[in-house]
Length: 305
Image (cartoon, rainbow, N blue to C red; front, side):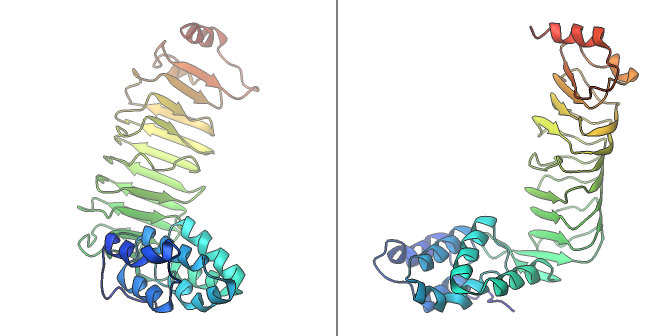
């Protein structure tokens, strides 16, 4: 079990503690390192702590092995902190231990500390169906199974990690509070009648996707992944830039296409789309093996000369 936060301190207080060590006026001690871990899991503070350890001579760096390892026991850290810790572990000869603790935390069932200024927790669970969630207790959710079903939860947490899920279904959900939604590469996702999708959702690796009645008002552009089928049905506020070129089969129906200015497809325009796409839209077809309606494309591209 890792070190719990027993004496929470804000970022400014931690900065005051670490300042002389950051400036090189003093050499950081084990007691100071432990105090920081007992006070916070904020990324900036943890990063500063590890960088202070990096300034020490190699023989003294090795003395901080336990502090470095505890930074990843039941605690989530961003990648830049992973990189600093891996460098320390490599020089100290405990790379395998560090990798073990990182892997154990990633798969732990239960509460893990998130990287944030105040002590907040992510629930890591093997549950697959979510119709309610204790938003007062958790600011994060990670599903450790290959599928996930979320429906109409009143207050979703700000951080959702579904990178273990091959299949994701989200129905009638307002994602207004969600700042980060992480998906697995090559997952299959269906989102139906969802609002306020955060614009940092990375759909570019999704294998098959269905967005039904979703509101994309936060997206300037939408770039989807590679797979068999992409369905955008009744989508509201479709962005002006749309890249569906990774899919063999595309359904784009029931949506307002009047603001569409760029459309990229793998194959020739389906017949039903030829009547719906405005003349002001630039269409790009990436496949050279399909018959393209050249007269239509020439007409469209003339608008951009």
